[in-house]
Length: 287
Image (cartoon, rainbow, N blue to C red; front, top):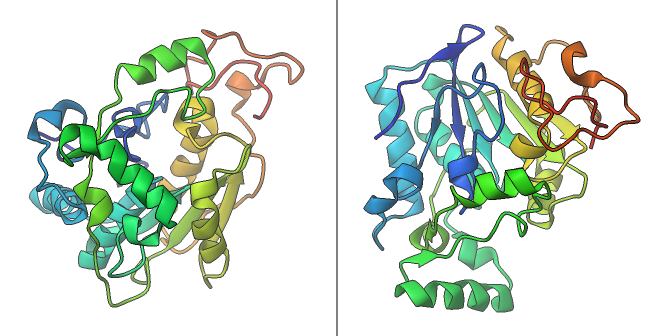
């Protein structure tokens, strides 16, 4: 069960979520940039389809199937965290359908190696032990606080939506013969306050790639919750770029919020004070 993809700025956008937290992938992003976020097979409202047969390839098949069924072209393919592994598989399979690839603080795969394969032995054993309670079918979801979400209202909202991750997505690999991105325009966005340890290696890889655009937003790994205005602004800029190879008005570091939500930089936003136009917190500092 997927939702039809609408366009923003004349282009299609597919947002793929992160590990156990994928049900909140669109987060607080305004509807202008999150009309076509998908719950991967076995996650969110599709959790009843969770079995031990769900692998990373299943998720690639799932998203590729939607793009084919909806006859989408010039897609802005966005992957957050673990979603970067899925995005890599999709664009490798159908580069002609993709206009731009965006990795949001993503993990990037190594061809032929699973996530478990790349983990230190102690972390690997801990991950497998956590899955034992489900008979090796899935990894329990963390709570919102473990994900670095500090606002109580946001914590409650996210906790209601978390679901286990199929273990097979961690123990299976995808293989690709060409470079990540298949020559399509790629933007890698780091969330730097604080730096998310699991994304450090991928960010270093991204900075070494010729032709990739690197951006940084000083916020937490769960930026769709903590800095939705900044993420929305970035995606809208990419969506408006008809050249497919550049981001018009490219910027790095701190992103300037729209005037509707800047307010006083000295005041913290209240827990429930969010701008109705861009979903960003009113009067917040850029954190």
